[in-house]
Length: 181
Length: 212
Image (cartoon, each protein chain N blue to C red):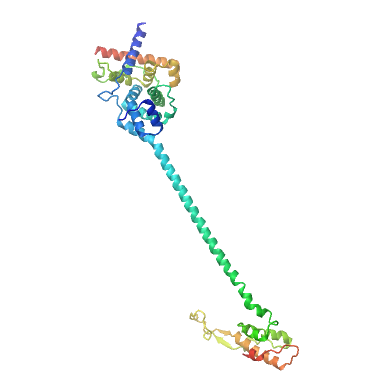
């Protein structure tokens, strides 16, 4: 596969070059898919988000001003796409009253892996309720403030804080179980 | 304070793990999207271009059809317009011919007698002495038309059929008065009367021609 730098990719995509389109996708598909996996419940949902996200990337390439990294611009589009998918779910911020509901998603001992690699942690995140998962991702990993999260998700700041607190609580319990096992 | 520290450590654990992943995808393939994603993306980003080309082709085809239809009607209209003047011109050409033929008839007095006789429409010249003319010249002295009962009867079989078709059944016995023969007889009688009556002020008619 031919390698292009960001500027060449942008110009080529704007010209409609299929080679540049393919190269851009191949270059950014894996890191963007990792981002979307964190916001989704499984790989299938992440692929749906990624499809929409890359269509938006190619469609809105003309809006890229080049004042930042192309990867950062694409990542913001992917996160926005994931949030728009999340907003389509009716009550994505509803509370899960009991931890047992969350814990029941871990079926085997292998789910509580002692080796906390990326794939294991991704599995923990994907088992979180959608609202918990989104707020934790935005706050802990993407670096959003509660005000920004509230604005992005259309919720109150208090709801954002409570969702983050419960997400952490759930993850802590799961991690404790992992270390015990 | 220990709890926030623990929570922050959870945040840090996830953040450091996901932000420091190797560039190459995992061998297990958990972080690699399936190929169908790119297929769908490619289809979506190429669809507008192909749709536009299809749309442009359809627009061009529609324009071509419109032009063809317009040219067809334009040429068919021109053909009609081209045939109409010919048709109208034909009577225009023949119209002046007719007066040339009839010109001597209109003014017979100015022409010599033989010239009038040489005109092919000689029967018309004879008709100037028709019974009606004689009748108007004689006034009430001219005999009236013969009654229908006195006229010779000619059956349908004796009359030539213009179309050659056989007469309708039951129509053979119908007797139709032959007005032509009656007119001839009447004409002869009138001429005889005219011949017996000396009239100085009238031009002497050519009775021989009239008899013929």
